[in-house]
Amino acid sequence: MLERRTSKLGRTVPGMSPRTQRKLKQSLAVTQRISSRLAGRLALELFLTPPRRKTDAVDIPVVELAQRGSVEVHGHRVATYEWGDTGPLVLMLHGWGSHAARFGSFVGPLCAAGYRVIAADAPGHGASAGRQSNLPEFRDTLRAVIATHGPVESLIAHSLGAGACLMLLAGTDPVEVRSLVALGVPRDIDYVLDSFAEMIGLGPRANTAFRTAFTERFGLKPSDFSATQLALLVTVPTMVVHDRTDEIAPYEHGEELAANLPHSILHTTTGLGHSGPLRDPATIDAIVAFLRGRTKSSPA
Image 1 (cartoon, rainbow, N blue to C red):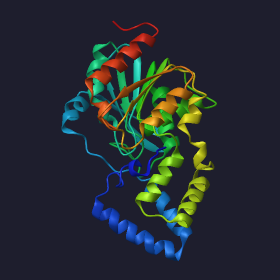
Image 2: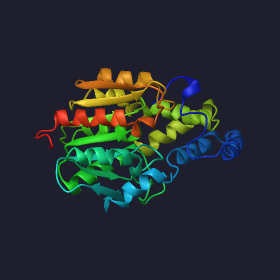
Image 3: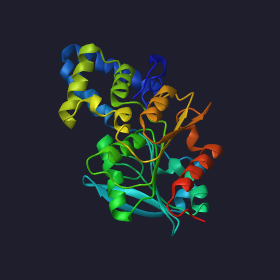
Image 4: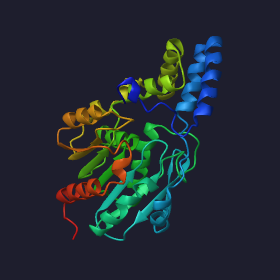
């Protein structure tokens, strides 16, 4: 899910200090000399363990206004947050190492437009239980929230969360929604794995072992988790939002995704990076307008 070597997931492991990352690379360098297979397995455990991000101060008041709840995903209690009493339901899902509160800037505009809004912390994120997570668990979080809270009109998701939406909508048992907004989606897991391997200093043999461990864990090759390939099977009208200066998923990833989606528009931003669009009023207004144009009975 990424491109130019200088832009791959930045240069540091998300949520890890440079000092800790240096020590990790040194430890893995020793491990690789002893056993590439062991190094690959350790890398997978690290890869599947998200950092816990604190809620930004600006989002705390919005979270405090939410009706709190939970659903169960693979034995984990997953936290949910709901705003608004009536109207078409919009479900939002964050990216890796993030949490539901990152969508705080969306809540006011969506509720003002007449929507009911719900967001969730994926397993291992935010206030949800669990230490690790993965893309299928993100997808199953969406499915669990929909099963509990009723039909969803629209999905809004960022980064890995948007990849989970594509997986859900392209699957053999897709849910029915009227629209999708996908922000900052990396191209595929292959790109993400290569980026992570580079950041933690895996050599070629350990990187191969890392990928083998991934396949053994999930029963699928990394190449099977491709947002751009899943997009070919998604018929829902989709707004792809991507920034030209995205430091995680290069802009061409958004272009490819939009080109592969049968019914899509590409909304381009500049200078906001990977997460900036989540705070950008103009982008949020454009998203609300897109949803309203595809709502069965447009809210007042």
